[in-house]
Image (cartoon, rainbow, N blue to C red; front, side, top):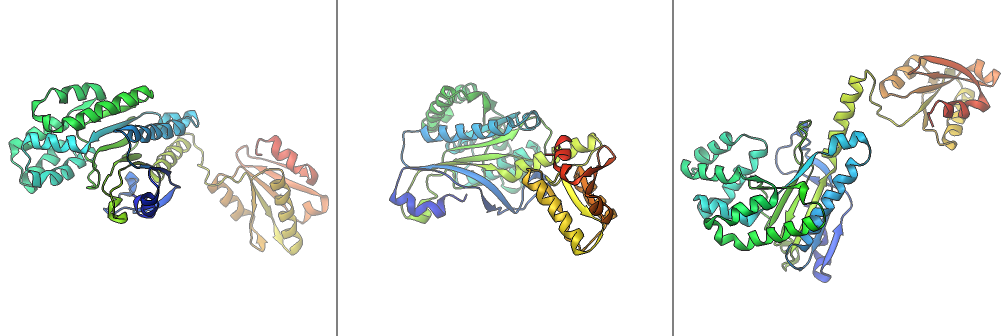
Amino acid sequence: LPFPRPNSASIVQLTPCASPSASQSSYRRDNPLINRGRFREFYQCDFDIAGDYPAMLPDSEVLYVVVSLLESLSALSTFHADLLGSYTLKINHRAILDGVFSAAGIPQDKLREVASAVDKLDKEPWETVRAEMVDIKEIDPAVADKVGEFVALNGPPCEVLEKLLAMPDLAPVAPALADMGRLFSYLDAMGVLSRFSFDLSLARGLDYYTGVIFEAVLTDGKSSVGSIAAGGRYDNLVGGFSGRAVPCVGASLGIERVMAIVEKAEESAAKAAGSILRSTSTAVLVVSIGEGEELTAARMAVAAELWRAGVAAEFGYAAKGNMKRSLKYALENGIPAIALLGDTEIEKGTVQVKLLEKGTQEEVKREDVVAYVQAQGLA
């Protein structure tokens, strides 16, 4: 959570404030899982609001920002829509979670331990979580079964809330339930409530959360990556750095996870099409065959002409050009064209342009190279 420490001093001097922070690196304290997008070091983009406001107003705006970010990503293309458009934001409240645990019979000193176990339900089946509660955390089996009934509750926010309000055992958390009702009305007013699921299994194991908690997860079953955005309210965390309590709520978008999902899908699509996933934006690789300053200068000149015309091009730094090595490099990286020069081409004032996908090669006058490349749709 990058926001509290660097901003604690400014928050004390000037509150309230909103901080859409720049993307920055963060570090995971638990074991990374590369195949699930859980890297030791990773980048995320944060949006936080600090200060005293009427209940659930900043929370609703933060949640709206998360929905807007995910909608913007899925609107980039039909490919992105298919990949990222099917998502749900699971939402819960730490006070309500503690309330249902207490109602089930969990002792106060075991609440965080049980929350830690329940937090694994997105990765483990209930049977495994129940076994941990009973065998390791020494929870009575009947109490664990009662917890299981509660955490199985999920669905449209207002419907789940109505069920919880009808439970007499949850009277102690009536204020939190009222806050959730208020939050749902705000999200409905902003037109995004349908994206949410009130999910009692969402625990967010980090102890600093004090109120609303949420996670955005993909629902199409195509990815093994977990949540792609998450956050919640953390009213006591900034005080550890600033010396005074400052209510805060925020969200993080997992940039690394989104990129991992997109990259894997692109690789699968390229494999299915029998093509190579391009690892560079280079459209033309400029190659000279032979050795000498004149050939080096010639390939640099052609590359510069292509750059000035807005064509993504590159040339090798090797003193002596090697066609076999250059062709291998272009094929492995998905570069669609090679502009080839040798002593003969320099004498004739031409360039050999090889289109790798089409398997064709054509000799083009030097002054026409840019126009020819652009006509092939490589600009």
